[in-house]
Image (cartoon, rainbow, N blue to C red):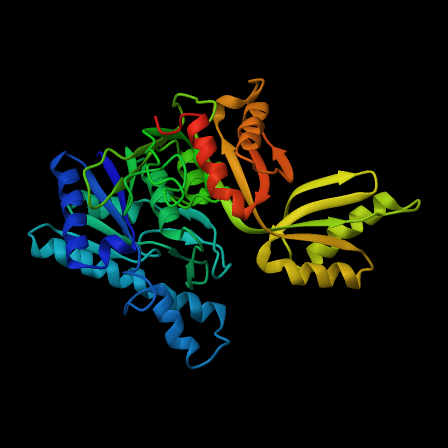
Length: 398
């Protein structure tokens, strides 16, 4: 049995037109000899009646402090509604279909409400339905814990449902349908003619997602990578080829650009005395105790510096001041990352990027790097021209 897992996001199932297009994709796969397993998100966005945020607003209007267990039970409903609607639509077209919750589909999780991890998937419930010729529609974003409680998987949960099912069912491919034509080399809001990538490696797409690209959640990619299942990002509403995410793709020195906005740089120092090293440790502990996530950590003999989410700026200032440390905070920054699996071991990549930014008049405040990523901290006001110059300099439109 050749299985394809197809995931449709909220914009794909929110309207009659979207559901019709989704049904076309499902039935086309069936006509090609595949057994389709379909994962769906909740319909639409905040304000639309069955969207997850709308359901949250409904209860928040009554009480601000809903228990995590009840909240998960509530927000799982949007996906369940979508499964029943899609299954009914397919049945009306003469195709046997069945709607399943995450638990009914065999998805077992831990009990971490709101951000549950999948522990295991029993593929037999889905396989049994497929063997009867049914199209299986699964509610994304959810599973069930040991005690039978409904849990949700957090950000990117429906994508994770799809790729985890793909691995468990040994699917030929997982198709993620959305409202864009594929993975782009950079943010099309900043570069309107940003190119669609034909393919990209698991490692590269994970890194792009961690650095701000929002096409697919890294946890979903990791599930597919562990199961060696290729992913195809496609547009529900167009016939564009899309982007293949797989293990063995051609390595490029620079594959794409990603960015995070609203970043603040924090410099703590000067630190003096015999206990300078311990002071640096205490600074890190202070931010951790304040529940502030830090990145791009750098040290000098008498100071330590790092970046934080701009929304945590005042909290960081206050925590450091209470701990007795002087800090200097640069707000209004952005983290721009250059990603490419082929840059490892290639001399001159940093020099070429720095030269391009210098020619564009962009000041680099801080850098960090890993095997396939170089990140630059710049002023957010320079972000658009920085991305545009790198896009041009490294031929990312090709």
